[in-house]
Amino acid sequence: MRNLNWRKMMSGGPKFFKSFHRLYSTIFALSSGQGKCGVAVIRVSGSKSVDVLKSLTGLQKPPPARTALLKKLLHPVSGHTIDKGLILYFPRPHSFTGEDVVEFHVHGGRAVVSAMLSAVGQIPDCFPAQPGDFTKRAFYAGKMDLTAVEGLADLLSAETEAQRKQALLQMEGHLGKLYNEWAQTLVKCMAHVEAYIDFSEDDNIEDGVLESVEKKLKVLAEEMKSHMSDERRGEILRSGVQVSIVGEPNVGKSSLLNTLAQRPAAIVTSQAGTTRDLVRVSMDLGGFPVQLCDTAGLREASDEVEKEGIHRAKAAAAKADLVLLVASAPLLPKVPLEQALQNYLKTCGLSINLKDCIVVLNKSDLIPDKIQELPENVILTSCESGEGISQLLSVLQNRLTSLCGDPSRECPTITQARHRTYLETCLEYLHEYQRSLEAEQDLVIAAEQLRQALRHLGMLTGKVSTEQLLDLVFSEFCIGK
Image (cartoon, rainbow, N blue to C red; front, side, top):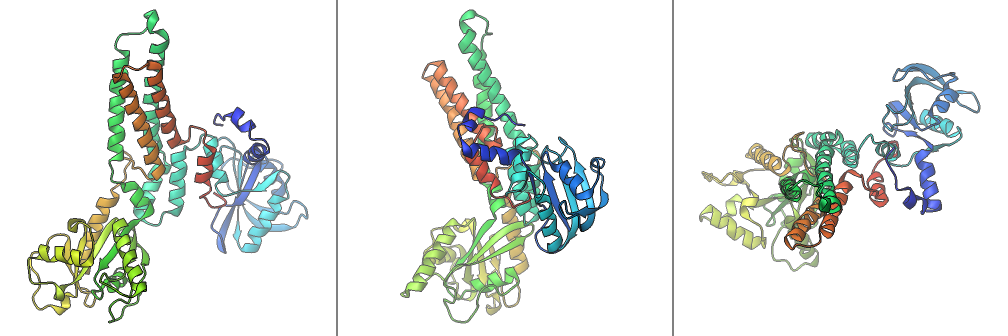
């Protein structure tokens, strides 16, 4: 069990005892999916798990560890048979939570699940689990650090292949390993500084200790900077790439949305200005999560509703990770293409870089002469005939790969805004330590900067007591996990 700040916890009064009781009581929940299904898994964790197993099966002792046994399951009060299913026993500490864990694999009908949960609830000191309770116990038992916990939560909510890959690497501890290595380096540097403060006058410290610490801290700071200079790839992949479709009215923005989504998500008519609000569609493009947003046509408007729609369209374009700028190919002026597109941006009232956009010249079926030698980010398409759509998808795929990156064991990525916040603060304290030395301040004061740096680095893996932080992370879990 992790070391807890008992003095702080004891000062919590009744709130502490309630929290303590929940942490060390036996909990149970449905750990498989909700609703009717073939098999449902009821998970029990805690000191009473074996008592629950014996009460529901009539066994005198638990079965061999991690061995499935088919048994009738009986209600502990009435003795009536609830179901016939498999039981599994995971003795501590070799279980997910580090406690004794029992699982009942029963038929997935609602009545069966309800009866099983009611039966387990009849056993003294057994309580229904709250969201994240099982994983919280795994964390306190040292089975997972906080980055791995977040990786598990991301894995449960992953909707695309790239999200699954990133979440699995984090759950397996590759990000936590990196942060723990940095923390170990910082601890050693602190130990040397503290030793120098305490024993330098006794001539028991080797020469060059502070210079050696300074070199190690500079290397550490450079590694952190490199880690953070990732253009938020991991965070973008985790939350989904925000792609906004913008342009003048009636250029085919909604048609393009429907074509990419392969369903009529947005209303399409010949009347200009049909779309007035943001229309969002979640998609999986080549394994990457995309939030595709259709917007109101950009033009001078007198209607208050349309004005608001245009305001939202510009705001969506400004916040987007990627912009699809749609123009009507037949209406594009016969001037050099780049100049025409720059003028089009000004007409739309957009202050974005043309090179950062993917430009879609739509309605190519209405022009007799095709534009030759287009730049890589300019695609000629027709939502009517399908021309250029496959090329657009290919360019989109390349841009998504660039935006989200390719997470690996060797280069784990930052996936949470809190990671970046704590790393930035840690880095600032390292810089403060360096500035303190340069200003020839008291070394005791400089050492405090290292302590603060280590404290914020510890926030990443959860090795610093932060009840509010833990509650925030675990509250995002579903019941039974």
